[in-house]
Every structure is written in structure tokens, then in C-alpha cells.
Amino acid sequence: MDVVKIDYNYKGDNALKELERITSKAAEVQDNILCGILEQNKDAQYLSKYMKGSKDVLEFKRSVPIITYKDVCPYIQRIANGEDSSLITGHLITEILCSSGTSGGEPKLMPTISEDLDRRTFVYNLINPIANKYLEGLDKGKTMYLNFVKAETSTPCGLPIRTVLTSYYKSKHFQCRPYDPFNDLTSPIQTILCEDSNQSMYCQLLAALIHRHKVMRLGAVFASAFLRAISYLERKWSQLCQNIRTGHLSPMITDPGCQMAMSSLLASPNPDLADEIEEICGRPSWKGILCQLWPQAKFIEAVVTGSMAQYIPALEFFSQGKIPLVCPMYASSETYFGVNVKPLSKPCDVVFTLLPNMCYFEFIPLGKNGTLSFDVEDEEVVPCDKVVDLVDVKLGRYYELVVTTFAGKETGGIVFSFLVSSDSCMETGLYRYRIGDVLQVAGFYNKAPQFKFICRRNVVLSIDLDKTNEEDLHRSITLAKKKLENKAFLAEYTSYADTSSVPGHYVLFWEIQWLEPDDEEEKLLMEECCIAVEEELDYIYRQCRKRDRSVGPLEIRVVKAGTFEKLMDMIISQGGSLNQYKTPRCVKSNSAMLKLLDGHVTGSFFSPRC
Image (cartoon, rainbow, N blue to C red):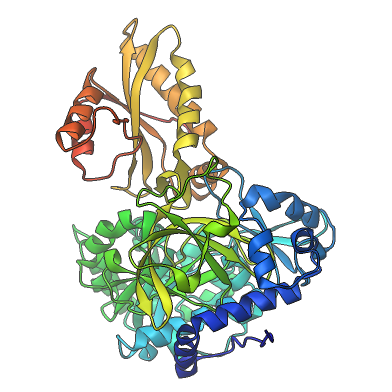
């Protein structure tokens, strides 16, 4: 098959036409993508080990194994240490992308090539034309979209290490993009590129308030990040109003870029605007505050699917349910997967049309419970003949996503503002990589399947970017309960992600039998246990707690003796099997199980660590 070069340079109506073309010819486009990858990377050491120089598609499907990060990590580390890109790709590697992280520990590193930015930009160029089909006038105002970068590091050989969004915001694709009336940001670019998140947040909110009557869209990458901005606004609105009233920027802003950018927006005092904002923010309730501060806003753009769905009630409170929540795109730092062609769908109904020109997609069949639908000795080892192609998935069935990219690997399906939720990686030349996302086929757009994001495999708890699986949770509790030795023992436990406040925090329900009851000693021991659990959770949790402060102190709620027996009785009374009963290691918010547990709490203890 002849390999045809794929063009990603489409905008506006042309981007919509390309969407129709690639989804109508999904099988052909996918074949062309795989042939292109094999042609360009045929000399890569990793691929040659299995293909022996062949570019045959059938040989690829027979010989190249389905892998996880641990299988390719040694190759990536060698590149990070200075070895040639040809280990895994036929392209020059220009930077290393750092995943948001999974529950497995340290963030994952993913080499990337310059061509990846073209693919990401193609998806960005689709978002607004799709939205404009349903919401007219988006080109008549501004977008308050909160973007942030993170400080970058470098590999031993000097390659920059960045998050996928930092990579995009620092690229010419973002900084040198032509004026787009559909995406006219309120935030000056200098405030986005400021690595001090406190100063960046302050300036971006100040700019959004100055432009409040022009704002047509609100948003941030994740729902949790947008709520954190509202929480920040609650603390800082008085200072922001003072800046607008006097025309002078707060002295807390010391970043030169922010100072320069904001000086033009605060060119003169505006007491009338300050009075408007002050009157709104000073009201006793902030219910509907978003509608009042930005009265022209047509939708809120953020990840509200997957683990981010827990933040929907808070968003609906602040918008009074009058501003639609839009999740337009599904992606990871590995590659961008697809778009939501019906952006006004309710969050629970959102499905994503996978774009056949992004990478080569394959799927591992799963049962409804997320386990493999075929028998294997080890679920980590999936036979090559068990995966199915993009166009061969079946309606209503569940699958785990597998990708092969031009540059090659992944770490999960995080979902950025326009995405859906999970954890991720970036295109680097790795092959048949398991993303870890559980998807359900919900329909088809032309001949391309549409998927509903169900969950990440093995994730138990999730707040903001942190995702903790059952294994990590059990390990941390097992080590922490050693603090109770000779004083008490832990009879049973479960967990819960409490997002009723910002930031959210993890709650552990512990049923403890005390050998020598002592109220003062109990408090000290429980706080020590909180610290011990937090210390054993992974790098991303600690980063969210310490640096980002997007996760609050861990809490242990001690419950009465017999509480978990009552929990078992309740579950069995609802149809559960006594023979197969296992204590759920996580309970959902607003569930009967949570109400039962909370009704039997005898003490609550928080980690004293800041």
C-alpha cells in the first residue's frame, strides 16, 4: 500500500470537511497511518527487534507485543541519557514530555517529535467550528480560559522535560498563531507563561474581570482547576476590585512579564467596573456567581467526564445550572484521541468520536467490570490476536484502548479542558501501548466509532490530577496501621474522595478495636497514621498536596464497632452475594453506603502536615 502524506493544516469549515472525510474513510485512513508509522520507523531498534526490517502490516500485528510503560521505559531512559533517537523512532526527538502521572508512582517520560504539535493543533482547530454549529456568536467576544505552565527541567543530555500543555503553550503553534475571533483569550500570553501559579492565577482572573462584559466562554483544562480558580476569586476579589478601581496592579505581582501585560489593561482607574464586581462578589451567596460576573457566557469548557464528574454539582451551583458544561475533546499527553461532535450533550451523555488520523488504534475486549473478556494467565500479557481494529469494535461492548503513534507511547487517557478524564503520555514512537482507559462503544459517526469514557483501570480514588489504585491504597494503609501495634488493630477500612469543598481530600473510614482506650493517645496515633498513609502514596499525590495544593490533608474517620458488618448487611440486602462479598475499598459520594458510614463516625482526624 502506498503511503500518502497526511495533512493536518485545516481550519474553520475546511477542518469540518476533513472531519467528514476521515470518518467516512476510517479504515483506509487507519491503514495509511499504520503504513506511515512502519515506513518512518522501520529502522528503530525497538521495532526492528520484532519486525526484522519488515514493513508488513500483518507481521506487525503478529509479532509486535501489546505493552505497558515498564516494557519501554529502559529505551526512554537511554534516550534521556543521550543515546540516539533511533532506539524507538525514525524522527529527531525534540523534547521529553512528562505525564501527569498514574497511580504507579513517578511521572512517566515520553519522547516527542515536532510533528506531534501539528496533530494536536488539528484537533484544537476542530473544537470551535464544531461548537459554533450549536452556539452562534462565539466570534463576537472573548474567551476566559485559564491556562497554566509548569517549570521545566531537562534530561542529562539537555532535552527539555515538559508537560504536554506546557509544550503546547511554549510552542510557535500557540504563541505565533494568527488571530482567531473564536479563541480571543482574555489572558495575556505573558500571564499564561508565568511559572508562578499564584501570580498567573491572579493576573488571569483580573484580566477576565476587566473584560467581563465581553466574555463568551469560560473554562480551564479540568473542572477541578476551574473550581480552584473560583475558590481563589473568593479570597482575592476585594484586592482585584481595588486594582481595577485605582488602575494599579497589586505589589504581590513581581513577574516582569505579568507586570508589563497587565499595565496596558489597567491603563486608567475604572471605579464603575470595580463597583459592579464588588456588589456581585459581596453578596451572601455565590450561587449563580458565574452568570452574574460574566453575563454573556455561553458555556463552561472543562473536563467533566470520568473522575472529574464529581465536580459537576459544584459547577452547577456556581452557574445556577444556566451555563452548559462542555467537554469537547478526549486526549492524553500521548496523543489526542477524538472530539465531541455534540458539545451540548449532558456530561453523562458525552461521547467522543475517535479521529482516525491521530494514530493507529486497537482495542482489547473487556467485560463490563473492566476485566479481560478472554482467559489469560496474566492480565498484563495480552495475546496479539485478541485485539481488534478501530472499525471492528461492536456497539455496546467495552474495550481498553491501545495506540501506536508516530513517536510512540502513552500513560493514560487524561482529559484536558477539552478532554475527558484519566492519565497520560505523548507521541514518541512506541508501539501497541496500553492506555489503561476503559471505553464503551456508544455509536458511530460515519464509519468511525464513538466511545463513552468509563474509567481508568484499577483507579480507586481521584482528586484533581491524582489517581490512586486499590493496590497503592492497600499498601499505604498496611504500612500505616503498624503505628497501632500494641495499642489497637485495624478491623476494616474503605475510602472516599470528598470533593464537597475546595480543595478536595481523601477520607479513610477505619473500624478500630482499641486494646487500651485513651482519647489523647488516640488523637496522636490517628494523626501519625494520616501522615504515614500520605507518605506512602505516590509522587503525584505528594505533588498535589505540597506544591499544587490541589488536594487537602488526608482524613481518617473512625467508625463504631460493627459498622462494616452493617455495611455488608445492606449490600447483601440489595442483591449482593454473601459468598462473593468483598468490602468495597471505595464508596461514592451521596451513596447509601457513605450515609451509613458517616452515621457511625465516632472521631475525625486530619493529617497535621501542611
